Length: 152
Image (cartoon, rainbow, N blue to C red):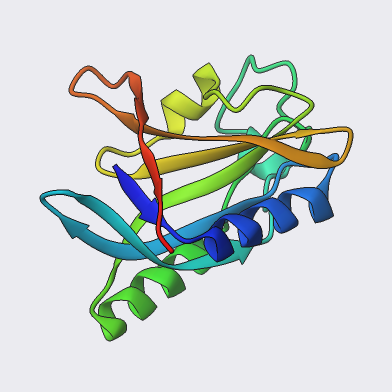
């Protein structure tokens, strides 16, 4: 389970709408506990997907399209990790959008995912944010739905 406020969801949805028709992405900071993850902060990032990033995925026919791929720049991720340590919080996940596509993970999303992280995906249809789902990898590296609990 991942717990977050309506304000956190609004940040994600606004970012997704602002970057449409490209995918947006960002980092989710929070705390890990036995009863799930609690979001503290959403950090929108730039989609750093590029031909250089795509070179790591030969044979992918849509590798150059930010409409179907996202990447967080390594230096941004490193800075986020340092910030999390300084603030005694964790990076608990990543969010991204699926322009004109359902809020379900793609095979590419699965291949790039890390254990322990939550992956929030927002579907954006014709520029308007819609369905939002969260996913986690199981022990077989397959995505399983994760409950989103909205905090007041």
